[in-house]
Amino acid sequence: MKRLIDKLHIESNLSKNELLNLLNNMTSKDIIYLKEKANMVRNKHYQNKVFLRGLIEFTNHCKSHCIYCGINAKNSLAHRYRLSKEDILNCCNTGYKLGYRTFVLQGGEDPYFTDDKMVDIIETIKTQYPHCAITLSIGEKSYQSYKRFYDSGADRYLLRHETASKSLYESLHPNMSFENRIRCLYDLKSIGYQVGAGFMVGLPNQTNEDLVQDLLFLKKLGPHMVGIGPFIPHEDTILRNCSSGTVDKTAILLAMIRLILPDVLLPATTALGTLHPTGREKGLKSGANVVMPNLSPTNVREKYSLYNGKICTGEEAAECMNCIKGRIESSGFILDFSRGDNINWKRKY
View 1 (cartoon, rainbow, N blue to C red):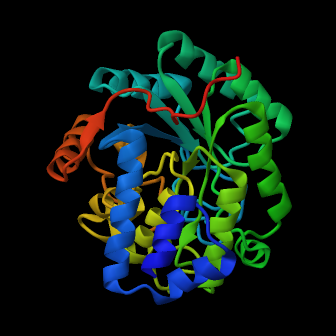
View 2 (cartoon, one colour):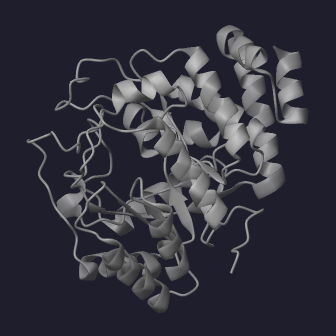
């Protein structure tokens, strides 16, 4: 295993069988060694900096039926909301005063927010905060829509592929196309975005072979960001009684991704912190280098319920920031208040 980890460290690549061998057979000592190598690579490219993103969950309306998600269209128990443009700008203002220089606009696939509405929001944020980055996470769109958003000033786009197994993807996403999901990611990359893909760890019926497919897909795509997190069931979905993924397995995959994509921006996700009190710290110590505290108004945070037990739903933005800052610094990292772009990305125009 040590030889395979060294090879992955040096070459940033392994074969399908080698990756599977690692996932199936690493001992606790091997995992420690893997994380040491991942941290070496992270520190080589980004030092011990952790980049901050301000998350604004601006709508929980969604037209999609993803069976694991608490805001899917079929969940009649979800308490729906939409933030107004003014609400979104207030979140940005609060975040800017706290030092945030990236705003992440995340929502369900909500037809109310037309391209025109999104362009207006993006352009207004860019006018008021010209040196800040805008990340969008609003699902599958056409090439033309993605291009309009980019031309309006959006810098990054997060679109988890969720799983690179076509059969597993289609079992989780009724009436959605695996091929279209992949098409979206390649469209985003061709337009010039910093692109974020990612997957869930511990999905029902997911195997290590499926996870190897995810790793190989990420190597082929070459995204600038990768968001992974443990699957956590939601009480209002048909997967409510399924077991969660684990922090330990997610941390292993974070470390492997860091070695496969050395310059990637890699979040320690809220889902990690939901499953374990120091879950995000475990992610950072496995090669991650991004955190995304919540800037959404506290009166809507519980309504953006993708899974059970989500943390930080009652904290004000300043509380959230102070908590994260303390955790990061006590873990031996430095909170970086810059835009935190991928080191190998430059805007096309």
